[in-house]
Structure formats: structure tokens, C-alpha cells
Amino acid sequence: MANNKTGFTSSFGVIMAAAGSAVGLGNIWRFPYICGQYGGAACLFVYLLFVFLIGMVLLMTEFVIGRRSGFSPEKAFPALCPKRPAWKLVGLYGMFTCFLILSIYLVISGWTLGYFWESVTGTLSSIANDGFADHFEAFVASPWKPVVFLVVFLAFTLLVILGGVQKGIEKVSKLLMPILLVLVLLLCVRSLTLPGASKGLDYLFHPNFALLNWEGILAILGQALFSLSVGMGAMIVYGSYIPRDSNILKTATWITVCDVSIAVLAGIAIFPAVFAAGQDPAGGPGLVYQVLPVVFNSMGTVGQIFAILFFLLLSLAALTSAISLLETLTAWLADRGMKRNVAAVLVSVAEAALGVFVAYSFNGGLLSHITPGGMNLFDWVDKLTGAYLPPIGALLTVIFFGWVMKKEDIYDELSNHGVLKVSWFKVFYHILVRFVAPAALLVSLVAGILT
Ligand code: TRP
Image 1 (cartoon, helix red, strand yellow):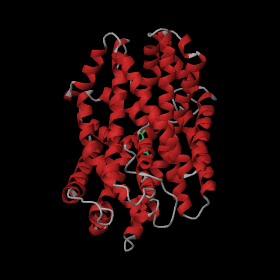
Image 2 (cartoon, rainbow, N blue to C red):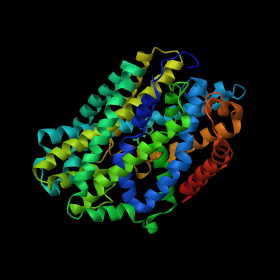
Image 3 (cartoon, rainbow, N blue to C red):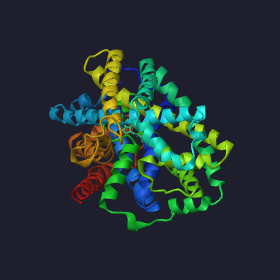
Image 4 (spheres, rainbow, N blue to C red):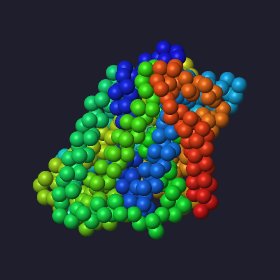
């Protein structure tokens, strides 16, 4: 590392930590309902295109910026181009995005932890099938439940960060990510063996392009970036922890493949079950809380076990992402000279405060009457962080990388100072980085915002 920070110990550690950042609520909570809204397989097709052409390019971009500079975003941009210090604003923009994302993340993770708890205690399985929508509404509108679980979840996250980069983040990710894969596979097997499962697979794999409009394309682009945790500087921070001898292309490929696979597997676990239980696949943000419990209930006693496994899966996936978000903000303040642990606690307190506001703004909550522009605070943060902020951050980052940073520096970093053969460099740099990614980002942004 440029300034002798502690980083990850191995490429495997990098992959697990960064895949942990990428795989989260975005894959299991948001991806299936976005797919449901924008045409199932049509959405999947566009998503894959965006992930590999733009998302992965950005992942490599951020890794290079991070490892080359050794800094978190605010210092990383100016360090790589000292003549133009104003680029640090892109770094700060990223910190703002991460700050917002973590607040909504804590709220949803709090619900998830709450549902995990209720599935363990049997509360969930005692509810009648037509009662889950009401139950969810009552849960999120309760003055204490969402907040208590939010704080517990945040406490777990903070503990890992206080453990440090190697003994906290890397160790926990290496443990949790394989567990996650096993859990999601288990759920897939159960879902696929339900009667009528094929309808759900049809839905996920037979495209209906009629449901896809420009608004949808921007939402899917935002989702592709959100899901890979790019466009907000988080991967610059993890990039600054990558060992000098790790192969950035290989690492990024593994992370992208993990991220996409878990999203698709989550779709396979969820849609067949939704159809088998006669529920609506376009259930929106409430899909996993209102629809899935019906599915679990209709499985009899094993259903309770699957409910526990599912909400555990979702909580763990959310945890490794929340860790990455908190680490990004902590590293940023630490680079500005604050003590690491003090920074982590400070950020946590601020996030808890904002999180409580967001939590109370949901349907029926204490602050749900505050609806500027017709949307409550939760919907605002969700729309901003899901669709708008990441593509703008991504566009600025890739412009910096392709048009401001020195090409020789990029080549040197991707080839590990000439050790690795990078025959793909020309295509990557001259085509994808400089033209395809910025053009696609710009077109989707403009078209999505105008329509
Ligand atoms: N990728 C995460 C998910 O799919 C969410 C996320 C977006 C994120 N930006 C991030 C996580 C930055 C960590 C850091 O759920």
C-alpha cells in the first residue's frame, strides 16, 4: 500500500470481501422485484449486458484508482492527478451516496433481522395467509420494532469494523460468503421441487420486452451498478486494500460472476415459489416480506425452517454489504486524520439518526406524513440511491479514469508493473473505458430522467 495501511492478506480474501460488499439486499431483495416490474427475462438480459459491459469495467476502474493511490476516494482522485484537485469532489459525492445508502440499508436490514427473529419464535408461521400484508404494515409502522432491530444490526456491523480490515472484514467475509452460497442453493432446490415451479422459471427466463421502457432501463442500469457497489467509491476503498500481486482482471471477474450468480439464484429461489403459492410476482419492495411468508406457510412445518433460513440468508448478505459501507465512510474519515475507531463510532451514530428518520417515514410510521413531491423519505432515498446517484458517480469516475488519469499508470497497475500480460488492455481502455461505458451511462441517464 502506498502509505503502509493494512490491507487484505490474499486474493481470496479480496474476492470474498468485495463479493460480500456486492452481494446484498440488492441481489435478494431488490433484483427479483425489479425483474418482476420490468418484464422478467427481458430485464435479466439488459441487466447482464450492463453488469458485464459497464459494471465490471467500473469495478476494475475503482480497484485501479484505489490500489494505485492507496487512499480512500476524496484523496485518491487528486493523488492520481495533482494538477486537478477538484476531482476530489467526485470522491465526496461518493461518500454522500454511501451515507444515504447505509441509512436505508440499515432500515431494510432491521426489518429483515426482525423477520428472522419472528420466524425463529414462530410468530410468522402463526399468521394466516391473508394476514401478511397487514403484518408487514404493522411491523414497519411500529414505533419501536424497526428501530430496535436497526440498532442491533448496526451494532454487529460496527463490531466487525472495530475488529479491523484483516481480523474483522476479511475474516467475517471468508466465513459468511460460503454459508450464503449454501443457503441460497438449498432454497433453490426447495423452490424448484414445488409443484408448478416451471411457471416461475418461465417468468424469469422468457423475455417480455413490452414491459421494458426507458425508465426501466435506467432502473436496471442503476441496479447493475448498485449491485456491484460501484459508482460511489466503496470499491476504491477495497481497492486500496488489494495486495500488490493480485490480478485485478481475475479478481473483478470472480466478484462479478459471484454477484450475478447470487442474483439469478435468488430469482430461481423466489419466483417458482411465488407462482407455486399463487402470489403476484410484481409485488414490489414488499415481495420478500409479504409474499414469501405465504409461500413458506404453504409448505407446512418445513416452511418454518425455510423461513428461518431465508431471513438468515438475507440478514447475512446485508451484513457483509453494510460492513463495506461503514468501512468506506470510516476509511474516508481516517484518511482525513481521525482515529479509525472514533470515525467508525461517529459514522454509526450519524447513520442511526438518519436511519430512524427513514424508518419512521414508511407507510403509517411516525413521520409518514412528510411527503415532499408525493413520496415519503424512504421512497426518496430508495429512488435516489437505486436509480440516480450511482450512474452519475459512475459516469464521472469513468471519465476521470479514461480521460484524466495517465494511461501509463493504468497499464502499469493492471499489469502489476509489467509482470502480467494484458493483451486485452487496448479493448478495455480505448473502447470500453473511453467510449462504451461513458456513452451508455450518459444515454441511459438522460433518457431515463427525461421520460
Ligand atoms: N451492492 C450492495 C447490494 O447489492 C449495495 C451497495 C451499493 C453497497 N453500494 C454499496 C454495498 C457500497 C457496499 C458498499 O445490496
